[in-house]
Length: 208
Image (cartoon, rainbow, N blue to C red; front, side, top):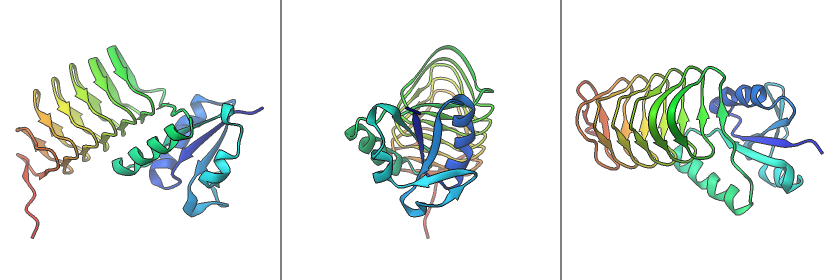
């Protein structure tokens, strides 16, 4: 029986991740899972809903969570856990991984990502185009790096943090859980859990 991989999410993130999965697993059938677009064809692949996905032989299916929103990604991971569906990693062939890097299940590593040495990364990490993680970093579960993030050495990042495109994080800092780093921000101080910082140097966003 043909093994089936479901890429959860048929929007922009999913459309970027599916070709990576296709190149990694040329012998498998690949579909999008998206309840809102079920029955459609997107980029040459069928879109099915969760119920139909679960209708396949449980021993032959796995999923990749291509959803940018960390909270939704976390909810879907728990949903897959409850259904005993393994989460697979999407890794582009151009990814550079050096020494003693440990990554939990379900990561999505886009083209030209670099992971250097002595790094620990939690579940369902998203590292977008040209982002890097330097030595001795500790990254929690469901963290998202937008394109071009520069995560320097000895940085700790809490669960579900979002790091915007082109952001630079100075060595040795701590970014709290659920924090948001704005696009192009230069982070020179620790960021508390749940805070949003923007600018150069990065400062708390004041909402008017």
